[in-house]
Figure 1: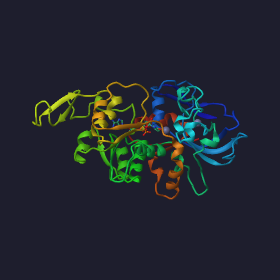
Figure 2 (figure 1 turned 45 degrees about the vertical axis):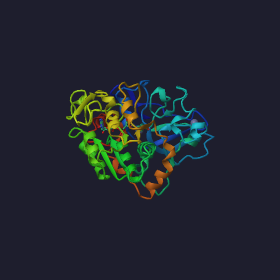
Figure 3 (figure 1 turned 135 degrees about the vertical axis):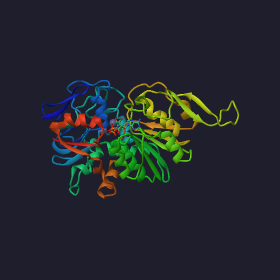
Figure 4 (figure 1 turned 120 degrees about the horizontal axis):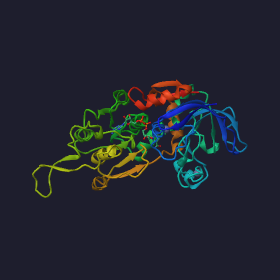
Length: 400
Ligand SMILES: NC(=O)c1ccc[n+]([C@@H]2O[C@H](COP(=O)([O-])OP(=O)(O)OC[C@H]3O[C@@H](n4cnc5c(N)ncnc54)[C@H](O)[C@@H]3O)[C@@H](O)[C@H]2O)c1
Ligand SMILES: [Zn+2]
Ligand SMILES: [Zn+2]
């Protein structure tokens, strides 16, 4: 069968691999009907995530029709159309029973207490993913997010329940967005897009969307966001001004591959210094400008540094964007001084799928608008190259 296989950094190819089979009585084999490329796949594509092995089939956003089912599969049957969450979870352990699907104790045979996911590194279990014609889904009773009913006419309506729609919603849940809140979403990629949509669903008054690709910003503007191109404006100054200095609830839908003033575009910064306007406590009330060292001129901390300056006091910063390592110069003092908390991690997809599905079937939301391209699976290497450029692309769906 055709599979999109990781061969090394910036090198993915369509290979012919054997079709998967049932290995455990609770497995199903799914014939993929639609699959998508995610920003998380780009981290793997770039080779910046440890534990990638050549030969791994990528893809954790997929749906399809059940081709084969093991004897212990009771919740679904051969012929059903299903959407699968990207987390691989047993449904039985303490974490699964408490809706913490991203932290299952039994899904990952390779790395003890880390959760597992399709099409990721060995660290997350090394399971083959769904950018292929078929995929094996373990723990099928627990790992079916949605059984797609007949009245859902197109895959595209529900495909994103596998990851980015729940992840965008999870971002607003972690941040506890409430009616009347002002929210700033960093990143206008697919996750940022659904974080903007979800902020409005939860009653946000104003949502600011920060990125530097006009096409992506236009898409969040269509949802009602006020857009900030960080090549042209300093998001910190902009948000402070617009909120009367109060700041906003912050969501980081970018992660460690953030670009920023290392790229030389944030004009109001002088070198590594952040100018703080106001009173120097040692000089009295003179409203002079004091300069303090920047927290980090390096790219991975760009969004964190911005958020630490504009997070509303007592708010929770939400980080669905992926961070995979230790990072120096973390602005802990700024966060401490503003009583700010941080909530982050992989989305427990299945916690949200039932309610989000109901919003789709009642036409309250239309996730298909995030799609910019539909391509044949055989063209997936070109699709990766294109998605990586970001400029004129938001979400690519692949058809096997
Ligand atoms: N937590 C989870 O469960 C989960 C699930 C899915 C994706 N993710 C992660 O979410 C992140 C976003 O995913 P995506 O699919 O939208 O990816 P993407 O790469 O398509 O989008 C990221 C966007 O961030 C923008 N960006 C870069 N630097 C920025 C900056 N300094 N300020 C504002 N925007 C900036 C980019 O231009 C791009 O548009 C990735 O890190 C991905 O791995 C996490
Ligand atoms: Zn994803
Ligand atoms: Zn479990």
